[in-house]
Length: 594
Image (cartoon, rainbow, N blue to C red; front, side, top):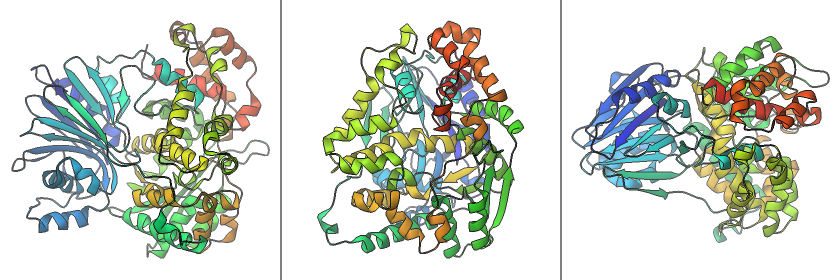
């Protein structure tokens, strides 16, 4: 787990070593243990290291194999690297380290651009093929590890974070109207390849991009499971699917134990993280370290779920850390979280993850977390009505439940310079849902949730906040084999029992019924959900700052109306418009984007 960066030149000029050094230094928190640079005449790589596997200098990066003509920077973890190492050794290759990094290099030497097909894990890769004079960029199947790109005449730069690219300089920081449209439509999500900035793009998940030294490039999506029923599964009943999902999840949890340091669990007390704890205990993990966080309550709204996390911790005798923070801790944490955001993220629980990660990183370098289960196994409320609509009705049903605002309302909010004539967000939604490879309306939406939305909401949120403290978070519910299996699973097994039915049946084998059948919870941070007190003052200051008025993202009369009367109903629903708008301006100002 690390931070990677690089620059490749197409105009005969040498790469800018100072710019790559600045990018690398900007990601010190992602890799506090070591740093390195690799230079060639047309490409330069930078790396910050967090030591998880092969703690020796032999596992350092950039990793170079002169005998293979390859150099590599890599962020993430390859869970099946021991098996791949043995397979490649049997094919005649030698190794000089025990790291998963070297396995990637040798895998490319053996399989070429199809090397990604053999990798099980989370990764963002920058690999230099010196004999062919090409740079290969790759991102894992579910987009767990980020990779940002900034192109300019004669060059391309890449980095694990958008702020690192800004640190290098010479980036078009104008607001992308389409990215802004997505941000204001979809709970602050801007799907790849866009960001809110015109000059920065993201390599999409499950994508390999090959860049030649003359500037030519090509991209290939190397993985996309079909959300259809397979003839081979026709004889499977509910019990068979439960058994298959159970086996795949156990494999996913075990895979994510690979490390040369202890592995903990972020235990919210919900079904997903509790199930991870139970399966780790079943796999023989003793004195497992678990971590929960809670905040001050507001009225009838609880600020913690300690009752459930304590129950699970006692049941499996974990070394449990209960972290309680007061509202006074939140305002400074908002600024810290915004600084750590690779992109603006309007979910109120971003700050909670930032605070939680700070505490967890004092005890472990690696933790497992339950992100992704709701998207993969139909755990959200809007999934339920989708079982009652035809395939072509998916877009209308999803938009009614998920969109923050419609196109006409959005045009009335943003400044004239950013108002689009066309409904860019609805068009992208419709195109994605209509694509072949999904059998029912729910199949199409689950594909959208998992492959388009999820990488740029909960996954990005957890990666950004955890890596701000040098903490690696692993997500078993986003295991590629588990996701592929769940995509084939009939929708009725997933929406059963109010959502995640098949997962709840797996959980009944190992968890107390009180945890399995509890009401669905969300990360509770009442002070942020209600946007009041010092947090509201911070948001108001950002929206009224001179730079915000000059930028003109939002119409002044709309901002004045929000500030005069915050929408409490929306705050309670977790989709507060004041917070969403203020957070975007706060992020832009924090990173000195004008």
